[in-house]
Length: 453
Ligand code: IFM
Image 1: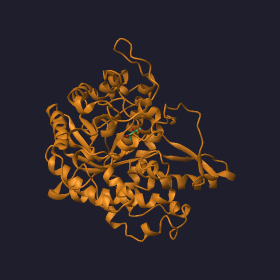
Image 2: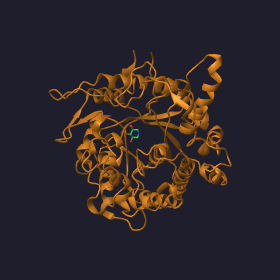
Image 3: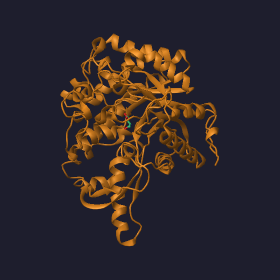
Image 4: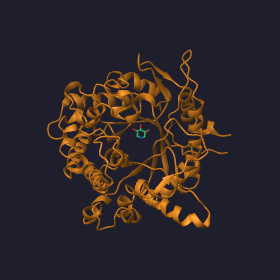
């Protein structure tokens, strides 16, 4: 099998602030919603929190050295907004900003291109207290924050992203209740989605001053397939598939690229005059269509769905007889090809990046400085092959970022799920590159040629 990546393909690794930094209140930072949520009893598995995490706040230089050893071109990371604006608005905390300046300096000194995500879920707690993503004003505060960061790192950081996985903020925070603010109300979803997309668009507009042209949005896509082919169930399962796709995959893509909300989803949620959608639909989608320069996609798995009255949006996911990761996610590499082709077609061929892809497995222990993580190596290999297949089918794919550089704080699962290419010992903070890190370094060094059969 041939594996082709363009010669200017960007190879990178990714992390996010709350998951690795630790020291969430250091140097004048305000609390974020995640800091607060993680300290509420019963919220996070094993009572874990991000107070220490990977202690990246103090060890960032060593981590940049680790990134350098992988030979990658780029590092995708995010800012903790509450380090910069402890109250989510107003005065800048220079000591917080300094941390990111030092990180960016360290990356540039090693020739590693910083890919900065402005918001990866950790909202200043003060903004959440003011209504968070249910409050229209948060979008304007995000534009101010964007202006601060872009101004402070101008000329140093070229590649920016507004939001990471807004769907997760909406769903896990306001519908499933597993993330802050811990609400469980499907009817809130359209308002939250709208405000997140307003924030994204306002952020892009704030960034555009001076003709800047390297900003994107990162969405998580889980392609949906209908469970049954037989004539009797097919129409129902197909409709379920469309609803599921509308909710998870089109909700944050169609308004930006087509100026429309997913129609079948609106119907499934009470119609255009219903409580959930009425207000959102009274506004034009034109401001959300602010052109962007690239789209990032985080791909982990797919879902095979069927109709089930009373299920979530009258659908349910059917477990498939394929291997699953420690997250319970099916390993399905062709889904990455399908996702990239689907996005290519749906967006009119915008440059795409795989901004996250990877897997949590129950790794064996480190033995004499080595950790042989065969399942993760297989996952990487097959998904990189799938990315290459998409390029062969004409997709404008510009780069691939492995999730994640380090074993880290996996949100409501705490430290129990390990996605790292590099093992982190929670007791000593010792970093040990896993065999998957060696494989990825070889992929990068050969621009994917080592993957060929
Ligand atoms: O760890 C997360 C990351 O923060 C966002 N994308 C999915 C990853 C794995 O769940």
